[in-house]
Amino acid sequence: MIDRKRGRIFGVNVVDLLIALLVLFAIFSYLSRPDEAVYRGNQMYIAIQDHQRLDSRGFLVEAEVTGTYLWDNTPFHETGILLPSTAGRLRLRKRDGTIVVIGGERAYIEDVAASTIKMKPLDSYLVVFELEPQSFEGYRGLISYLESLKEEMGADHLYLDIEVAVDSPMTHAERQEIVNELNAMYLVKAFYLPRADPQGFVVNVVKAEVSELAGLNIPEGAVRTGRIRAYAGYSEEPDREFPQGYHNVSAKGLL
Image 1: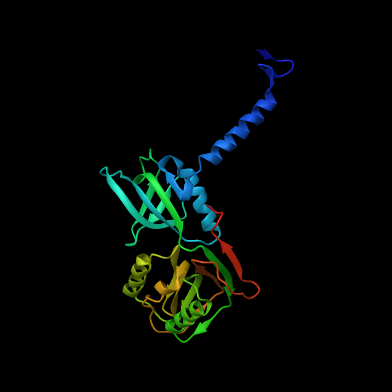
Image 2: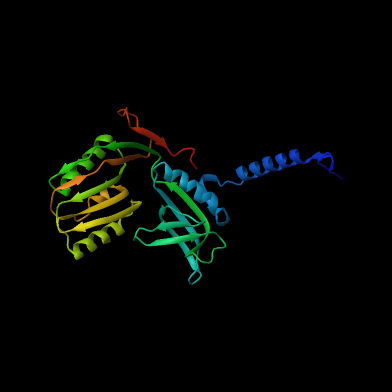
């Protein structure tokens, strides 16, 4: 049965056997992938990989999760934005700003043990481009500029990676108000307030939508930005030409 001299088991070369097993494993992995981005609780790593693929290309992804809330074993069924996730877990930010940690069907240290996860990017297409640093007399001027750009491009969404410096002092109460408003934003990946001093303050946001940025109560004062990365989101492929340096990215094929 085992021929050690020729490296055969039941007459089959060991190397050939290993190759055949690898091929079978690859076929099984492909066939076991979920249809229509619906994942079972035991497919958490596939869901994480698919989300990371979309996230790396600039897409915000919404997910509908059903499962069990582990603190009291009650049913869980919520929709929210998926945040960058690691260590076999997904993080879901609900519309009220609450972040819930999602584990697989055998989770025990996360908030929720998922039975199903349904993912969908908020946009089917993104046009990614850069904007030069800008200066305005006030925050409303910046928002008006961005809203006009969104309308001009005919986009459903306009997301921004942007750093905004404001020449205005900020009290602790004003800072907390802005933090609360940022926490309440739904269409945003992350935010930071890295600096505040008597002369002014800085707000950093990653993948924030301009319609929600418009609601921030930024104090009066001159506003400057660094270089801005912008993502115009569309439900249908945009039927227009964009300038050189604008990149059209499709979500199709990433799931």
